[in-house]
Length: 83
Image (tube, rainbow, N blue to C red):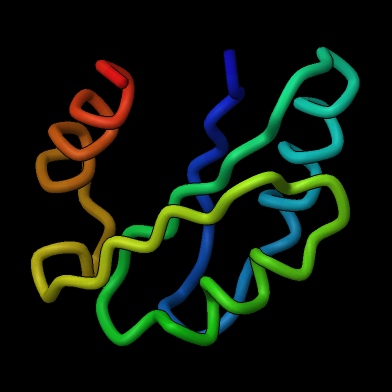
C-alpha cells in the first residue's frame, strides 16, 4: 500500500515541510505518492515529481483548491484513500 503525502505549497512552489514528510514516509517503507491540490499549480506538481523516491504525483488543479482549505481538500483525500 502506498503512503500519500499531501503537498504543502503556495500554488507556485513546494514548501520544505513536503520534503520532510516524504523523507519520513520513505523511512516507513513502500511507495510514496504525493497529492498536489491547488489552482494553477503545475509548477508545484512538476517539482514534486522531481523528489527522489516519489512513485507518483496526483495533481488536482481546480480553483476550489486555491487556498487549500480543509473543506475543499478533505473530500479529495477521502476519495483517493478509497483506492
